[in-house]
Image (cartoon, rainbow, N blue to C red):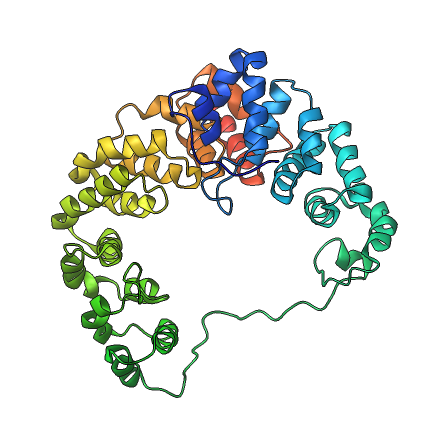
Length: 404
């Protein structure tokens, strides 16, 4: 059975590069497709994304399968595994179908007719494929729905007239306590006897209102009962205070409460001044030592505001770029390096043209130096039917600008 793993191989090895979706991994794999085949299949069999909600691997893996000319049989087999493995395989196969693979297209259509996770696969391909590729599956889908009265909406159910009423959606932030004045909310938050759920509701109310500076002195007391985290909504409300929270944030960043230290550094990253750079670098160092992969991108963006004045962060930013398994954050480290210490980034921007993340590929498109291999890759991205529309357009524009 496919399952999630987090024991990533070292970032300087081919397995580690492929697991992280690095462009260098794709380039190395192309040098010996037979040797890389098992590693590519392993990146589908197990989920190496640090955060499956944000990290992207589907296009990266689909390209590896296509460009290395690997058989699709092991991928198609994953459709019969658990829900997560099926989702990974289906997303890759639907892209390959767009590229012209009849085998991929028919495997997914067959799964809709007979497979266990047919509804999720159908909804996915209906959002990606031309309607004529899936519209004829209405009959089998309706038959399979009999005896399973689940609410479904979106495609293909909208087109087939079998969608349930859509649930209502809140527009913007809603004040849950509109009748209570902000001063009274602050009193509630300051009361040590007030229930935690009431405090969370009060913070939700403040989040929907204009910034309330009176919250600042109360922040250190607004941790959750276990002391490990801030109360829900507190970070968003504090960050909304902007620059007026900076003096207090400097004090928070020097306390021993991890959640308060993190909140203080978030405020300093967004609104701090040059004197706060050492504290932000120290925060980045702590995250590196602890292998905290989710969140350092915000510190990196804050340091980028100071340009060369944050030069002491360059080594850490390079390490995060090279080693993070959280590919969604990778581009932020490169953007920060470009502002703080851009030496040596030419080769990195070339590698980005093969990266798994759209933001990284866009950086490569914009900044990779003009070389024959870069022009060749730009044309590849421009013409690839599996590529995101924004990347295709940007690659075409850059290539046109380079062409005499």
